[in-house]
Structure formats: structure tokens, C-alpha cells
Amino acid sequence: MASMKEFRRVADDVRNWGRWGDDDELGTLNFITPDKVAEAASLVKKGTVIPLGGDFGSNGPQGAFQFRPNPTHVMTVDGGDANTLAQYGPQWLRNSVAHQLSEFFVDNPFRFNDDMIVMPLQAATQWDAISHVYYEDKLYNGFPADSVTSFGAFRLGIEKVDVKGITSRGVLLDVVKHRGADVFLEPGNPVTPAELDDIAKAQGVTITPGDIVVVHTGWWTRFLSTGDGAEPGSGLDWTCARWLHDHDVAAVAADNLMVEDPDPANGVEGTFLPMHMICLRDMGLMFGEYWDLTGLAADCAADGVYEFQLIAPPLKVVGAVGAPVSPIAIK
Image (tube, rainbow, N blue to C red; front, side, top):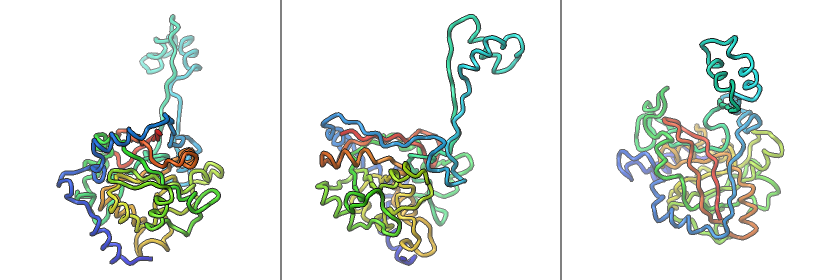
């Protein structure tokens, strides 16, 4: 376990406050330049589209955590409603939504279905906005923590990132394949910066500024087989924050629930999720969590190509500190 002194030294070394101006709200997404977007598009060779998003439903991974329940999906209008309202609505409903709907259905063939969903914005495949995590009353770039209120994030809301897409060159680092694991990384053995270098070298890929690094730990594949959203698995060691900084990475995503390793024994004394603290608050680097990398890992292993165009814009929820995403890789 590292000391708080070591944590602060790393945080000071990688802090990007003021790097892109005092009013910057994009953080490391600034590394995604027009040239980088064009480079990503040039990677499409065979026209293969690989979805990286999980299902948003009642069997999702967040059901294990009470403060983030799984999505609740309900129908607000359906075929049964249409038949009932068309037959009985005008006679017994007055001054109601149902009465208004019944007028659509009487004496014409038009019918429709409608639905709604109630869910935490980080219920399944999602981006953490850089306003999601803070410490010592400061957000990224020195913005005050109380700029996030019950009305949402006045600064650093997820909607601010729409100018970047988010689209860039994606690079898969397949830790499962590198370690020869059967399914996923067992707890207690976090991924180190040196291992990330070894994986990139073995895959014949180079991390360049503006890349979005996607880390395959096998956790999502494991979850699909067990349904246990609370089962721990290894992730990135907190010291990988410096590695991401040194490579000018635009964002990082993984198929597990936290990106970083959750084991306190491998963390920093007196803290929880120190990599979140450094990356989001000090670096301004977004995390993607619960990405389904099973198909992408298989495709990359088959053709030996671990770079691709990544398109992953979050849902533009004004003032949100995280948002759902349905990312795709195109090769």
C-alpha cells in the first residue's frame, strides 16, 4: 500500500490544471485533434462494426449496488391501451391524458406504442464525467466542488464533451490474452504500467497522443455467465495514472466496474479509488466503465489488429456527472 505522500507526489506531477486554459472543461479530450479524428477514420479497412455496449435492463450489473439500481423500463402506451381507450375512452374519461389518447385511436387505424425508463445515469455501459470525482473541495482545473449542486454540474457536466464526439483512435490492450487467463483477471493482481507496455509491445501497437485506451480484463464476459455484478476482479493499478499521463491518452475504458483495481491492499492509505481521484480530478481524464469487450477482443486476436476507430458519444444530459453510452469500434 502506498502512502498519501506518494499519492500527492503523483497527483502533483500529472495535474493538468491550466494546461488548456483556466476555463477548460474538456481535460485530456483536448488531445483529440481534427488530425486525430481523421487518423481514426483511416483505420477502417474491412467495414466491421463491433458493438461495445451492454444491455440496459433489469439484469444489469448495477443490481448488486442499492444506490445504483438497474434500469426500470415501463410502457406508457401499448396495444392493450389502444384497444381499451378506443372502445371505452370517450364515454368514461374526461380531462385526462387517457382521454386525449383515446381521441387518437377512435375512428382511424393509427396506433402507437410508447415507453419510458427510470435509471441511474451510470447504470451500465457509461462514461464518468470529470465532475464525477473530487477531493479537498476541488474539481478538475480548480473549479469548486460546490459548482455541482442538486440542479446538476454547472461546471464539467457530461454535455460539455459533445464537441469531441467522443471519437478517436481506440487501442485495445488485452490483459486477459497476455496473461493467458481463461476468462477474467482474478482479484489481487492489478495491471501495472510495465505490463501495459509489455502488452502493447506484444500486440505490435504504439500508444500515441489522443488515443482512447480500452483495457480488456474479462470481467464483463464473466458477469454475463454468472450474473454477479458484485464479483470483484483486477483492474489497473493506481500508478497507471502516470502512464496514461505520459502517453497523453485522451480517455480510458475497461470492461469492469471501476477501471482501476478495487483492492485496498494495492491502493493508497486512507483513500478509496485513488486512480479515480488522480485521473478525473487532477488530470481531467474520463473513465468508461462496464464496456463489453468480448467481441472486440476476439476480432483483434483473429486479425492481429488492435487499433480501430472508436465512436462513443455519451447521452447529452445537461449537468450530469456521468451518462450512458453505446460505443462501437469500426475496423
